[in-house]
Length: 179
Image 1 (tube, rainbow, N blue to C red):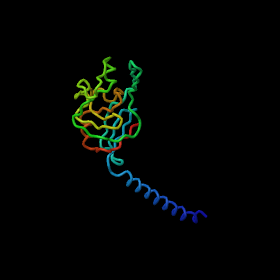
Image 2 (cartoon, rainbow, N blue to C red):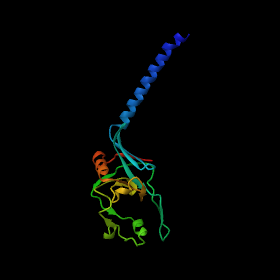
Image 3 (cartoon, helix red, strand yellow):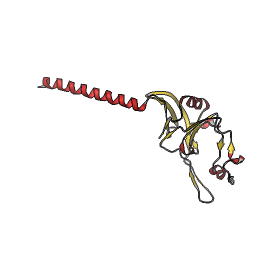
Image 4 (cartoon, rainbow, N blue to C red):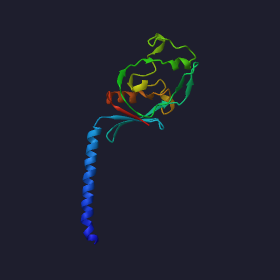
């Protein structure tokens, strides 16, 4: 009786193998061969991948989780959000347009006009920025010794070489998976 089942099992194995191969081919067509970014906020690791290949793995800095309370009841929670983003813009030599919380942190009044000179700071973002939705970005840092820590206001900071590689490899529309 065992001999009679063997061909049936072999046929089932062949059928299953063909189904798996078909599904893998469909997944490859959907996924494409474009790079994508994965950010592990627990380990502060940023990985640029293409299919199953790791193009670059880097130490990064992510949100501190601190909460800032404004004088008029505003609240800011400095976490790096866990979700899927996409790169909306690539910028060389970005200029930071300080949000209100940057002034609250320094116990100063924020300028009313969003383009006021006091809001503009060309120094802290590094040579490149990969802008994401909701004012988040992957950018450089003035403090490379703090990479690997939860220290940011929500953005993801990278060292100069890692940031340059990311800027060169990814395109507008590249998915960024943050968990």
